[in-house]
Image 1 (tube, rainbow, N blue to C red):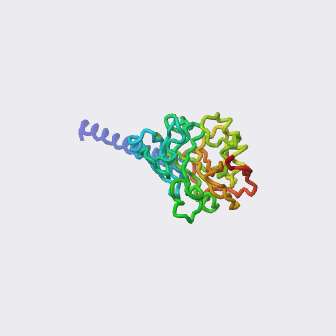
Image 2 (cartoon, rainbow, N blue to C red; image 1 turned 30 degrees about the vertical axis):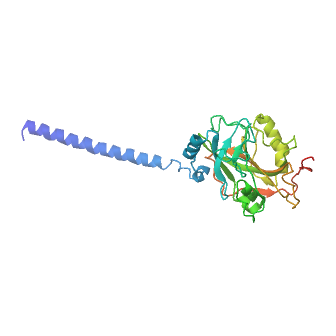
Image 3 (tube, rainbow, N blue to C red; image 1 turned 180 degrees about the horizontal axis):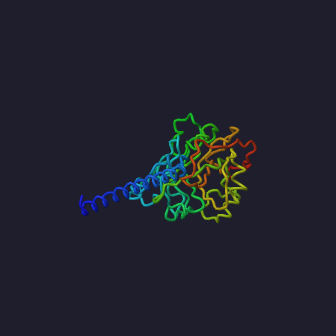
Length: 292
């Protein structure tokens, strides 16, 4: 073998050695990466509230194009409550007996109190309390009229049914919001100490009212923590009989049945049922009847 061939053979041998060494190094690196991968945290498999939420943004936009008073879509699982919500900032009675298009309708629509602050509809911009009204033609579950508008709110008077509904969903023009139920109560709407329908109070004022006036009236003690920074959704309707069976004298009454829920993060862990105990000593205003 001449010197040229010897040199070529030597170069080839050296290249082979370098290649083998390189492969060995890569093997070490790959093994190291594999070992590091085993230390990576397993992805969070927590089930989020968002997994059960429906996206109504397109539907709200469609309704808004038909009626500019549209502010959202209200949906309560396991009930017939699943419809558009309107808002007239000047007149709380405008939609009392009107349909979505403004024509007379005895059953009315779901509509927000004129003092409710909507902002841009995002969780950060909405006000401290959005109160939505709706008629209940009866609070008797056996009635053919029970499922009209807010009649099914009275499902919350049954503890077993209330456990099935930990959340209420409201889609605005810009965001799908979720609220966790924190109170089910009967209020005398003429009682100035419990302005549960107000949306123009400061957070401090509203928090004080919730803790001092609403929660003591709740027929359940919910395991839901309330803070001064919370925002609320309140649903208000008629009530025809008190828990003890006493007629309220509707329509000549100030008694109202209401559900209050606090805004929560859709990424919070999903609760499969509401957690509460029955409040055996809930407060009830002594006189909810209108003066003659």
